[in-house]
Length: 281
Image (cartoon, rainbow, N blue to C red):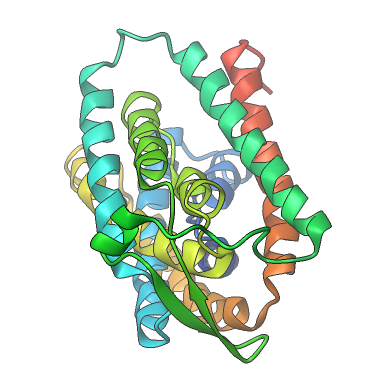
């Protein structure tokens, strides 16, 4: 029993580190390991994953706010679209065929991975400086952050606000209808569509995931999907991992974060498309 707890604790640390760096939560790591490695029922694995996302968000957000890396205005603005999308998705369950949505959202993730690959080939964090957006200026969404890797203050502008809102609405829709995490879509909305640098995108995504997970955690708690013996050591490990991950991310070149992100997006996008066509492993 102690050995199992220590293994789960270690998994939590790994998930927390990657979640804090990439802004996607630890569910993509935790759920497969708990179901395939430990033979845990998918219901309990998802319940533990939700708790881990809250822990990742809590640990990472505190550090990112302290270092002024997180764009709080963008987070709260986009969270409105995600929440509305999730509600609509929950209402429309059974109306739209899930396979169509899997293919659609999988294709969006593959497009995002291609866009990130283009930025890698260009050898720069941002391919072009975002054009001044009147809506972004009116909402005061533009911001700046200090990059500890380059030791420079980076001023950035946000653009294509309606496009970012549309992607976030779609992310909420996917979460509500398919029960999938929307972390990669959050990063895609900010990095690909709204032209935010990757580090603020990742940091902001961490906060947004915590808000979304906290809203659904109550449901999982009352339907008995959260097992304390699994969730507790996992959450402690994730919290420690997220704290470490925030320090690593801020000193990592954005290029290396993209190198990690691109194959991850290809994997998730490909898996969703295959699932949409009825292929499962």
